[in-house]
Image (tube, rainbow, N blue to C red; front, top):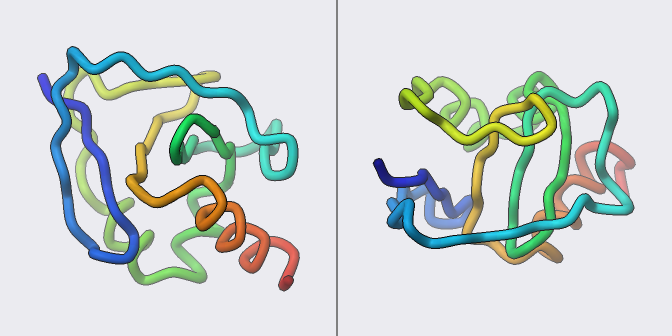
Length: 101
């Protein structure tokens, strides 16, 4: 079964073979213990809040409405959404959403 990857700029669903092995590390800037979704960009994982994403982003709102496939990835007990955007781009977006910077 393929993993699901998304590109925020293109609003495009991209499927990548499940045989591809990725590893990531937790962001030192945006990784909330009470977060309920993991965004992975490059090799960085951001643990954030679904409601915060949906509230401020139509793209995320639409993305989070998609049903999760059976066997969807989980990390730190939260569903994983892999993004094709760079980790720097995602970090800037999340800082804007959380810190207004």
